[in-house]
Amino acid sequence: MPVLESLVGRVFGRLTVLARGTKRPGVFWLCACSCGSQFVASAGALKCGDTRSCGCLLRENGVAQGLANRRHGESGKTVEYKVWKNMKDRCYNPCNRQYKDYGGRGIEVCSRWLTFEAFLEDMERRPPGGYTLDRIDNNKGYAPANCRWATRLTQNVNRRTTVWIEHAGITRHLAGWARVLGIDPETLRYRLAHWPKDRALSLASSTSAP
Image 1 (tube, rainbow, N blue to C red):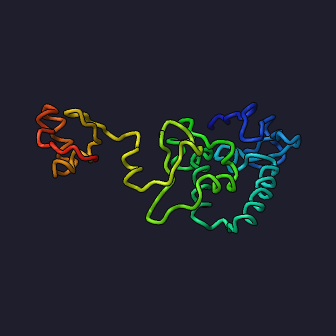
Image 2 (image 1 turned 30 degrees about the horizontal axis):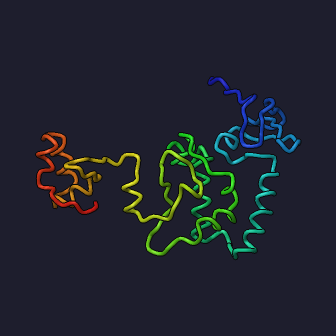
């Protein structure tokens, strides 16, 4: 029989686990909320981030969101609202499939942007044409100075895994050099893996930007 993982002492949002809850079937834990009340929550809800307070956080967010909705006419269905919600989910919900690349490696949302009203005020409406929310420095969190609306091409170039290559005083990402050479990026990748760099890039004489 598997050993029950103890959550005593662990903190989930505003909740600090005090003891095993014994009045309900299943695995439940008695928690103290930072607002002063006590609350019983399931282990699954705590671990996945579905329960982060006794309910006070939801009430506070509801009030704040209600004010934002009245000011901006948001219904929760706009593109900007969904972007904001997904941004927070990636950073704070361990059950989100992208959590390991965001919250799991320390990426956070600045305190100002924990309310949608402030996020919308800083970022304004998303431009038309497939723009998405992009962090300029992928090792820093979501904050006004580090975020922009960017095209998919810009985001692809800005990935942590992007390969940058310097040749003849010019630095381009691999896809940029492939465009200059007029070849498929995978062909260039093969060349760079098997040929000296100068030979692989010998036909790249253009100095235009990637």
